Image 1: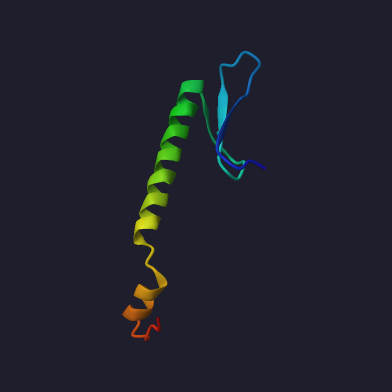
Image 2: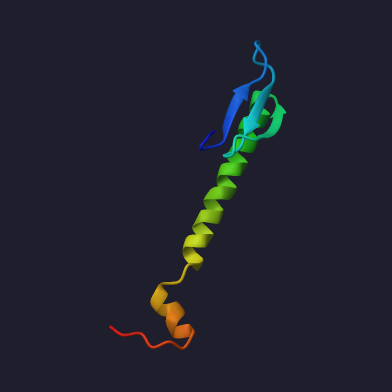
Length: 73
């Protein structure tokens, strides 16, 4: 089982490739360029999603105060 998206050749001549996602499922087949471009897009979307989640995570104190719970220091 893979841990990151990867591109593999499907034929001996290297004309057809397949892109697998993190769960080792095939996402697309096509030329090497097509698979690598889609891989770039997938990684960029993942990076942006991770950044957004980091920005929106609130510290526990802020969440507790918003819920009306007293925070002791």
